[in-house]
Image 1: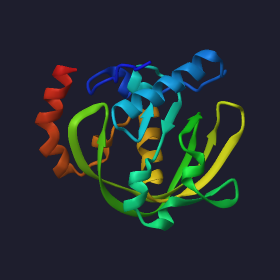
Image 2: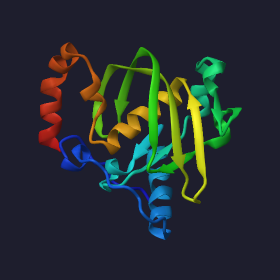
Image 3: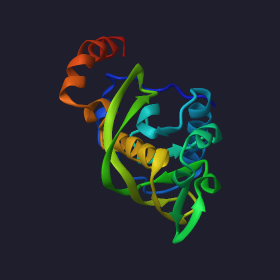
Image 4: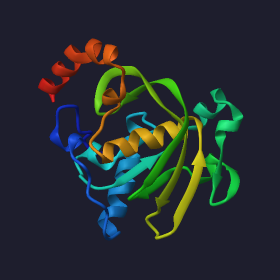
Length: 187
């Protein structure tokens, strides 16, 4: 079932999300609906606050067409101690993540399904170490770079009430101010 994507200006996007305490049928259904919604919106990630649910649940799928453009090394990650292709764990669905971004800052253009028609350069660490509890109770430990590292940071920011526009430079914030004000009114 397609869900409505929460848009800029909605207070749920600025709230710190609650941990998922118990995985039940409702959480499984929400995750499945989030994946369907993400695909329909041509996104690569979606956090529960983006569909109005203030819980720590994220879905990510780095599409294969992105793989073709990326450095092949960025398609590899250390997953539970083994070097593997990230496609093996897609779509990635997790709750209550713990992430540790590290490495050099890299500037890249980002957008967001909750911030319509705005894209901006955001500096983020190039790599991430993450602990990603799965819905079945297992845990994925991952160390990755590339688009997956950026997406993990972007989506986990949503769980803390941050948007990619908060991570832009002061000059970019000034440039975006009018557009963001208009989006907040349209809500």
